[in-house]
Amino acid sequence: MNEPILVLNCGSSSIKFALFDADVLPLPRKALWSGQVDGIGKDKSYSAALQELRASVVKQTGGQPPAAVVHRVVHGGTKYSAPVRVDAAVLGGLDMLAFTAGIGEHSTVLRERICVALSWLGLELDPEANSGHASTISRAGSRVLVAVEPTNEEWIAASHAVRVLSTETCDVPQP
Image (tube, rainbow, N blue to C red):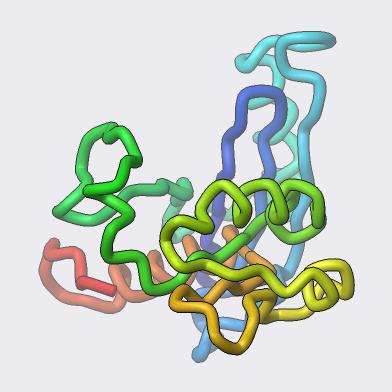
């Protein structure tokens, strides 16, 4: 691993981290190494969690500094750059609803409740597809496509870092 990229995914009670090799292109979806520090706010402070994370990373890399340290940031692009109430005006043009990450990927009950609440948008849930954890869980005639997409947030952040590191300017390329 010549150019490691360290990806941090900081939550309220845990920090996930992963190392990717920036020299391997296209960037593999599986991290070279990953881990998680739990118990923030219960057993340990954020500062203690970061110290634990740093010790793990130094041990794993032999002290080699990463080419980049990136953090996953969720945003709505230029249109939704600040917090916004999700209402009829925002959702009126909804073409697709994607459930991702832990609870979105795994909770059929949550997906059903959300889809029922959004049925006024023309969204029709296929209960069998939902209970079977299919990748598409909307009925064939639904105006809104409903998908379940496994998420690899650390890989997404690392691939953005590879793009940034490969440019000669400081401009951040658009996805």
